Image (cartoon, rainbow, N blue to C red; front, top):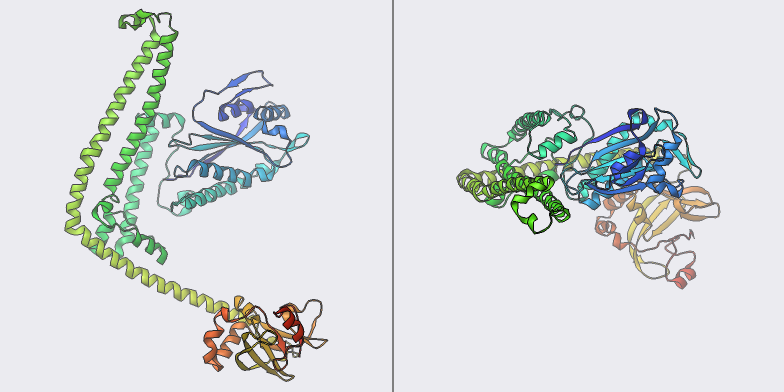
Length: 575
């Protein structure tokens, strides 16, 4: 399960920290602190997957060298209580592949810090284990070609913290969605989210290591108690959400941990219906008992692999001690001579202890795999034959009915919203509010005929106003169809040319010769008068790639149209 964690702190000299030492530790590298003369060697530190430095475009090239960068930071700060750097530590969702996780973190850093002028030193830790996370060290001074300048006080604004926390949640959720996961993380507290859940407490490095080794801690016990309370709350909410189902369907939904969200849409219900199990084996895998045992096996396997890696390291160390020991003659192979090598004997004891732990884990894994899981499947199969299969069928029918009702309601809401937008557009473009110079035309004819100039069959409209008759050819109407709420206006300029409003260019029109409130209104008028042409009017493929305006269907420039084989859209024609 993906969790949210992002913490921020200041690396300060007053607290005994060094920017060079901090960078060396987080990146797992060897660095010399020029201010103190101390060498910090963390090259043997385990868990460091990668360390990357990101710089703004104005930063000099030496800023990409980690040792030069943080030594320059130390030199720029002269006070004993100087704030050297800002650190952000964030947890990376375990569900993400390593490449996707890396790119997500770097994109978050570029967007929020590097774009503002900060230099970021990003270290990725434990990317292949159960606690992948990143440390981000940020500079506190502006940097230019000449080096570091003054402090940027705006970076210390407390409002940035909420922005950064929300931004990381957005980046992580997009990455989870791209990876095919529906779950999301939220930077807000449970209280701000309106959830009846108690937050857990942070274990810390030491407690986390002890819990991993199977040693119970006080903090770990508190978290386990909190998890049990949250589970009880979740169960009660599940029962409340599924209360609308009939008893057999609700019983199966509770058994298979199927939750119907409060704000479920028809698409959500469709996904739930498609995810319903097809047989008893698939249904058993959805039960809490099955998921618990599968999780137990995975955790046991991960712990066994960790112990195996630790044992291999101990065996390698013991072999090197034996080889380098002064007793590495033939006598050193005699068990009685091992008293002379205490460190070697200690490694042998460690190897034996690790082997015993691994054997216990192996036996537990085999017990769950060979005994517990088959027994659980057998018991579930009896339940399934008695009432599970029939309950699942009832659940499917009820979900389909609920999905149909939601889809109908969503369609009604969509139509209502569309009608409201249409009414608003008509109100804004109503011809009644036009000036007195408008000459609104009336559609007096509609049909199909050979187009002047190229002979292609095309649609036409006959428009009449007080100045005469005009013909509108071709797919000029299709342009309005893609913007159905635009007003259809045809203009006549000072030279007598008739053109569309979008083709006026540098010549302002003298008056409108045709005006419709919207293209939708024009379609309504045509379809009511000539219903036999409704089908063709609504099919975009019936409109050619050009249009023309002319008197009595005669274009003003037939020779040009015939020569080019098409009628240019940007040419205006005389009446």
